[in-house]
Image 1 (cartoon, helix red, strand yellow):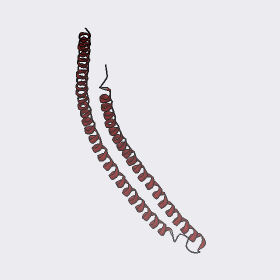
Image 2 (image 1 turned 180 degrees about the vertical axis):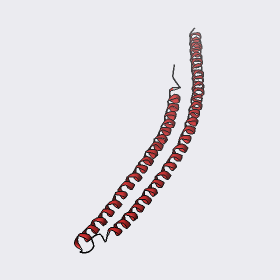
Image 3 (image 1 turned 45 degrees about the vertical axis):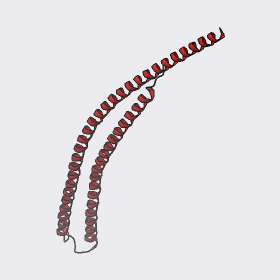
Image 4 (image 1 turned 180 degrees about the horizontal axis):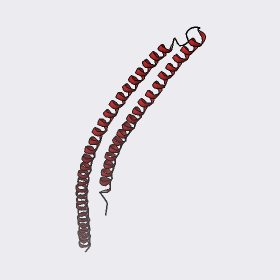
Amino acid sequence: MVDYTTPVTTTFELQRKSIEQSQDALQKGVEFQQRFNDALVDGIESSETAQRRTVELQQQALHDTLDAVEANVPGTEGQLDELRETVDEQYEMLLENHAEAFETLAAEFEEGIATYDEMTGDYLDALEEQVDLLLEAHEDLEAQSVEAVEELGDQVEDLQDQAEEMQAQMQEVSEQAVEAVEA
């Protein structure tokens, strides 16, 4: 008996694998985007730390300059204390604004990322449901197709059996006719 269903089942199996691989690729793409977003937030925090350190180094350099002036210019001892306080106040305000700006930026990014994650999560859940329904319908179609091919195969085999029977009958009639002519 010939198996007519193998190409049909193989085709359906390949189609399902393709659907599943496409869904997996989409899932991995979303996961990559989420990791990228997390790295972006980490990068903001690293940038804030580096910039804060640069501002602090600038403040220290200004203090070192004032110390050098005070040490090398006669009559400036104690004269620069008020300037130091003003510099410190300005740098303190700058650092507060700097920290607040980065905090706001990070919060906005995190909120945007949370919204993105929620939306993509909902999208992926809906997609998974649709793919499950598609695969279920696909399996039903495969079962119907295999059944139809099996029925067609049975009909072909029946026709072959009938053709063989007719050929055998014709052979027999032909042999009888030859015998009748010889007799």
